[in-house]
Image (cartoon, rainbow over all chains, first blue to last red; front, side, top):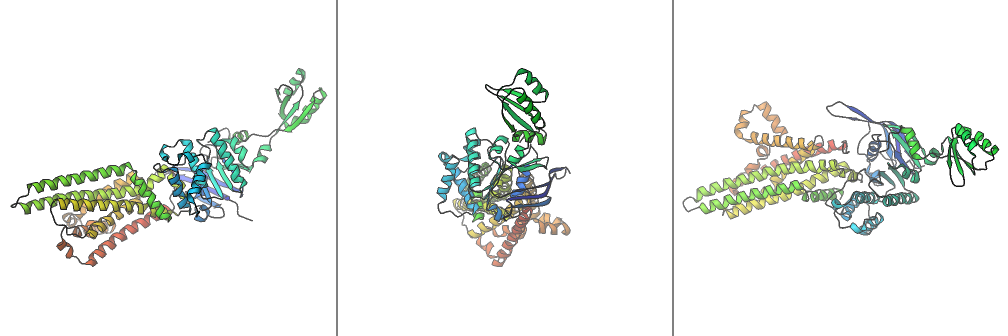
Length: 310
Length: 267
């Protein structure tokens, strides 16, 4: 069986300020795995340790303790880096270059041998909708254009694993949708994507798996669908709800939402049988009774205590 | 291939750098001062005072070249420090080091980029020297390779020192240290100062500081006459150049060792 794409085992990192003697714990005994072919969201509020984790993953910084592996290699190993595409948070660039020259530079560094590098670069620029700005110096790009260019450079080496730190940051809604579609296309090609995002609804749409950290500790990890399905609420849809019955329903802690030709009742799962029987007995026609799904945002806020996302 | 790519990119970045542009302006100003001096002495030269004017003019040209040479040391140190620290500060290093590139390859590419810049600088210095002496009507006997190799080696030493320091310290602090070292060396190179310093201080300083003037004998070889050069056999050149290369290599290897485990993050 192939090694996981990413493996963190009891990883600990503490930042230490020289001279001041201040120690700031960034990661504390973090363990998780990302399987190959998965799209995994790495979530956490500001200062949770996401960027530190990604930096360790890419070999930019060393962990104090613990073991980490990327595509079966130690972080920073060139054999792993040959197969990784990375988009840093707030992607920075050589301002004096244009997009084509920057991608040529990164292509040479990637060591990838291609028959027609110009065609590859033109194709990538077209993919991120920058083909009309080939000759423009990057210093004159907007924030969104820089982000698109960052995505293009991450895709340059035809990577097996993509590590994307906030890939939709700075993009307009259309750009965000394009990135979502791109990630889904990469997933269909069997690539592994490990991304952090502050837009939880997007992560919910595209990710198979979620890892949530807070204050350097792992809070939750699991499959997206399983996690969202773990709700203790149900929704009962009835054709009508007499006023007298509405009061009784509300006394059971349920909320009522009246629509044109139906009424939606959201209640705790423990009361579902009592409510359903009461509604039937009250002459209501129960159209459906379904468990309610959490939204990722609700679950996230519940887990990190409403600290907000990055 | 990857090292060459980094070196070329580093050199390309220097060409768009405002500080480099400013240093080029200072270089041109220095040249113009030298030119003014040469033309002034030339116009004042008569049959009776030719010997005296020649001596005065050579003094002035020597001063200009001394300034340009010192400026080169600062430029080498600054370029080396900025090429690494600038990438870390801006965050461009993250995308670069995410590529299958080893840290020593990155640093070697940066170092070679600095040496490319300094090669152009040294060629510029050589051009200025030739031009000033030609305009002054003086014969130029010193072999061109001496005027290229020795300054370049000195700049290689300063670039390596600076690159080593910047793996540990802020680039502003690094430039402060370099400026202090340059001043200290200039002081120590004065023979009178050296004789006043006790041996137990002088010896470690000789070992640790890049006393290029004293140990390399750069000043000996940069004399303007062929006769002066002939006094030194080729073995002297080999020894002096080997010392400089060794010094630069040790500093550069220290830089690689320190950079190997350094955090690359912006903070």
